[in-house]
Every structure is written in C-alpha cells, then in structure tokens.
Length: 223
Image (cartoon, rainbow, N blue to C red; front, side, top):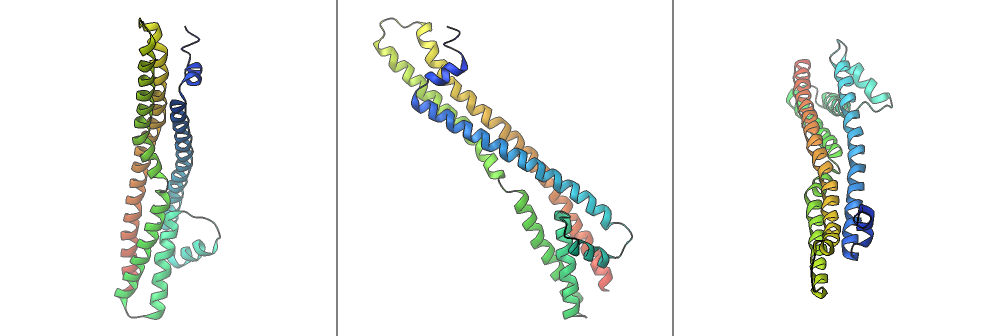
C-alpha cells in the first residue's frame, strides 16, 4: 500500500491526460524559477547601479564632466545613468541649436528623460506577465487534472461490485498530485511577482524623483 501511494508511483500510474497536465505544470514551474532568478539578479543590479550613480551625481562636480564620463566610459552605469545621459545630451544639443530658448531646452530634456525612463521600466518589467499568468493559471490546470483523475477513478468503480476505501484511494491520490504540482508552480510565482512589483515601484519612484530634481538643476543652469 505504501509503495502504491508513493509520489513517483502515483505519477507513473496516472492516466495519460493527467500526466500531460503534470508535465505542463512542471514546465511552467521551471519557466517561473528561471524568470525569478533572472529578474532577481536584474533588479538587484539596477538597484546597486542606481545607488552608485546617485552618489556620483550628488557630489559637488560639474555635470558636463559627469555626462562625458558616463557617455565615453564604455561601461554600463545602470538605468538612472542612461536617463541622465538622455536628458543632459538633449539639453546640450538644444542649447547649441536654440541658445536663448530656455523653455525648449527644458522641455526637450524632460521628454528625452521620460522616453529613457519608459525604456528602462519596460526592460525591468519584461517577463513579469509570465509570472502573473503562471501564478493565476497553474492552480486551475492542476485542478483540471485532479477532476479528470477523480472522474476516471469513479468510472473504474462501475465494474466493481463492492467499493472500498482501498480501491478508491489510489486513484484519488493520483489525481490530487496534479493539484499539488499546480500549487507548487503557482505559489513561488505569485510571491515573486508581488516582490518584484514592489521593487520596481520603488525604482520607478526614484527615477521620477531624479527626473524632477535634475530638471530643476537644468532650469537653474539655463537661467
């Protein structure tokens, strides 16, 4: 009885459709963990790069020098540095083309930073939709496998004159494995999605604050 109800034996002895459901859920789980690790490293790198660039930006130094350093270094200074580079580059370009038009300088710089901000957030948010889908769909896929397995178990009892718990338990246990695998795939995806959404919301707030503060600095320099 114990060997018949082991997890491996229940998976092996399950019906073909339930096995396909389990295989699909395992693929979803593998994809979720791949996205989780990649996104964790990406967000961590973005946060550390933002900390480093903010420390450099708020030092008492010339912004033109910082711009040339970011532009010519050939290194990846992070999302915030790219936002700064876009805004400062547009500001300098517009100042050469329209030296006296302060409004054009500031508007062009802010639009360039907003465009860079959207690109950076899109890159950080990539594949998050997969985690959301995996967290919401996996339990239902597992439930479908469970329902199908239980239905097959009861259909098998039609030819049995006297149904006992020993005859029903293996089939039901095999079916419930699909629900367990569905939860195994869904719970990490939901937890990771909520955590990453919170982290990216904090980064988005920092980027927004930097754009406003940098715009104020450029406005003072333009005048």
